[in-house]
Amino acid sequence: MSQIFKQHLEKFISVSDEEFGAILSYFKVVRISKKEILQQEGKMCRYQYFVLTGCLRKFLINEKGVEVTTEFALETWWLSDNRAFESQTEALFSIQAVEDSEILTIDFQSMEKLYREFPIMERYFRFVYQRAFAAYQMRIKYLYTMSKEDYFFHFYDSYPAFVQRVPQYLLASFLGLTPEYLSELRKKKRK
Image (cartoon, rainbow, N blue to C red):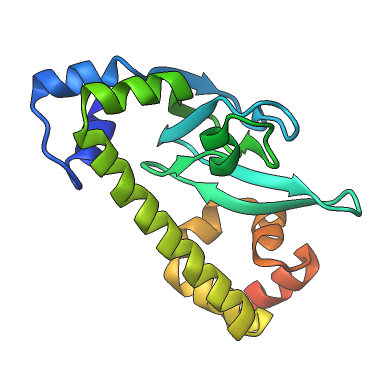
């Protein structure tokens, strides 16, 4: 499994096998079960999560008591309540496993030590955060410029395997749709 992380690092930075072994020592491998909660809203945010296998989701509970999925993380994606992690405060979001998953975790203190020992990792995380922020900006653009139907079809065409993989009610929540409307749109797409 460590090869998954090494290959991902090498998309952005170069590290020797020896350096990679030392970098990996800052992380813990954790196996989690489907529906297991990793981060609870209102609790201190202690970790960043890197998905080796499986799928995670970040969500909040709105004023009506409804869960709203704000983000997913598949293999080689990072997930955390970044604001809470960086400020070491209570999380505004919860994080849950959508599937049985294997992840790498790193806590705040370990990440700070990692940066001091391997400054190249700051460069790696800068690239990761830049890409994540760019994706977030595009999502906001689509939410405000596309109809719900167009947004679904754009998402479906861009990520067909993901649409098939994630439970419909979670996908509907992420796209701002009801599960019933999502079902209607999926039927239209099949025609």
